[in-house]
Image (tube, rainbow, N blue to C red):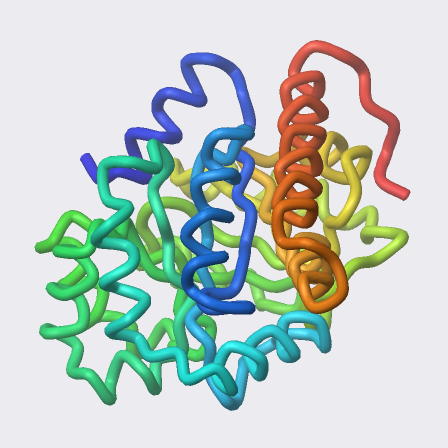
Length: 277
């Protein structure tokens, strides 16, 4: 059983939805990222998603693109990120999943990259530019190392193709709630519920929802139907304020925000929740 599988087994027994916050590695620097990961885990994150900066991000909106640009400008390297995660291994209490471009994986070599990540304590990967038809070699390597390969289904994915994606996924299925790029939104499509419920009839894997979720009420609504909620831009936007605000203040704010999301998700299992809007 992988680390991600164990998280969802525990959550299922407790009747809780997973909270999965996303931040960018090295924004504004690795020291901040290290402290932020510790704060996220201690304030209620079940899994931490860490973005590996890339010069040509896939499906990322302006907020996350800007964070990648800042991190790359500071000279961040993949090896530095893995060294940082190695230092944190055993301290976080929440598994780390990397959001990484397949171009980076190929450049470093599939086998070496997967083994290096495994040694650093990484629990799995989300590779948004990896087509399901080409996912086999990486999926096999991940399986051998006990890592999860989480793949994405979008609102426009034809259902026959969605079935192929969930069949080659492990850990959980990442359902993209909106058509387009990441970013905070005032409203989420009502079709999210229908699509998530359909996916849950097609796979035993947990289904988690990301893209566009930025408020506690949205997270709570999603938590009523999905197995987990992924929140990125709302956190990354707050982190961007370290240029104009004290770091300690920003860290306290993201910690409070994640605690608020955790409370909303926990209430989703015991209190009625209004429809998505």
